[in-house]
Image (cartoon, rainbow, N blue to C red):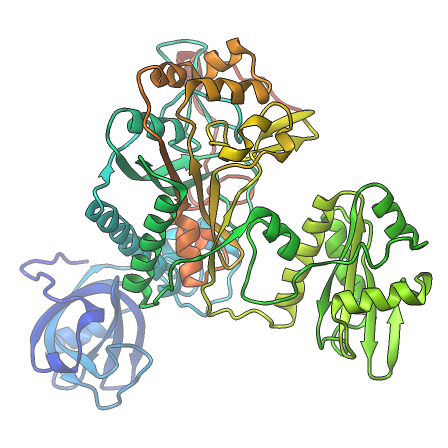
Amino acid sequence: METMGNLRRTRYCGEVRAADAGAEMTVAGSVAKCRNKGGIIFADLRDTTGILQLVFDDSTDPAVFEKANGLKTEYVLIAKGTLRERTAKTDKIPTGDVELFVTELRVLSEAETTPFEIRDEVNVKDDLRLKYRYLDLRRPKMHNPLVMRSKVAKLVRDYYCDNHFCEIETPMLIKSTPEGARDYLVPSRVQPGRFYALPQSPQLYKQLLMLSGFDRYFQIARCFRDEDLRADRQPEFTQIDMEMSFVTEDDIMTMNEGLVKHVFKEALGVDVPTPFLRMPYSEAMDRFGSDKPDTRFGLELQNVSEAVAGTEFAPFKAALENGGSVRLINCKGLADQLTRKTIDKLGDVVKTYGAKGLAYTRLTADGETSSFEKFLTDGQKAALRAAAGAETGDVLLVVADAKNDTVFAALGALRLEVGKKFGLIDEKAFNFLWVTDFPLFEYSEEDGRYVAKHHPFTMPKDEDLDKVESDPGACRAKAYDMVLNGCELGGGSIRINDPVLQDRMFRALGFTEERARESFGFLMDAYKYGAPPHGGMAFGFDRMIMLMLGCDSIRDVIAFPKVQNAGELMSGCPETVEEKQLRELNIACTPVE
């Protein structure tokens, strides 16, 4: 191996073009591919910007040619030469019109054969890719999202700074508080038996910053939640966090529509129309069965409870008699594709969400088949068909349950499954909307009490203030979520700034005065000294990049992600530690069977 000596990179591989032909330059990177054609050698050199073809032929200095003859993939090089137009041009890469005729070459590092090929089309198990993540990140498909992530972070900072926001870091070692996901705990060495928590969000601190007079704050913040993983969840993740004083919901939504418009235009060249549609939570649930509706396609839910009222069909009758509902989606024109076998498989989907089964009616040109209509009167059948707008070629998929939440969850998931399965979704579209007027509370069967839908500091709607204690289930919040293509992109609320109202909220959530003070005393004390009206929101930064680039998982836009068991395959963490470290922290480990 050699050193760079007096060679220094003057250009990046992916940035040169035909207009640069004739220029002398030095490039550096890793060999993506080598081809020896007998008397002429081609090597594709890859750096963070792209690929440039290097060429060596019979006019090359013999010593340089001999060195090129020994090149292998992933060798690290620095090469000096003259850029020239290629004879055989290609449009597969941006630099396909040019090549570098090399006059000086140094091999800075050799490489063993990699466990998998470093190319986008490679078919490798995720576990192997994650074990060798540093190799996986060399592939353009994995490399480019992190470059985009960096670009978007700068765009976010520029936008907020241009709008009078101050970027402020909040602590990573904080007090553990209730009413959230499970905390990651950090033991204190200097205060034995006491623990910090890693922040699930900067929520309390950003509210305190408003009380500190900063008026507008933002931060690209690291957050931690000890929860089960799925495609868009990681135990450590990044938020775009912001807060504003002396504002209304409209002010915050307008400000953040502007952020999204700026980011999508500058990063993707996409013009996002504003203002976004605003949809109340109750409407989102009624129409889409979800508080994060995907509006790129139809298949909206329809309530047919009145149409089948009085039916003797047991599942419908039981649902209606117990305060539930009967709802359906009309899969228009899909009768030939939605066979009985396919419908049976869709029945398994709704059962995953608590539904007892899936009823159906298929209306084909050859006749109709139904799992339930023989139990309906002619009048009920006609009313059902009319309510559903049913025509020949349609399939009605029906769910009934005593709990409307179960019906919503099951049909909401079903419409997504059908939309994906039959290509009803425009994958190139970016459909934004706001979901507003969320419930302030939700009832937890596990805890046997009402808990905060978002967090305990969310302001109730003015017209619902008198319901906080008397009818918490009917109380709505000044809360809003930004939704993109069926994913929650971000969410926030107006915060409570009245200590008396905050006390009422804590009591409604079942907090004793002692417990509220133990958990949130520092915030309650701060309110005594004057708190401006304020509110804000937080975006899932990883999720934003994932949606912008059409990736399948946020793991694809995080440099070193965790897997399902919250471990990192590359480094092997989490891992046991030396007994000495545990003693210093006054911790004893008990084996778990």
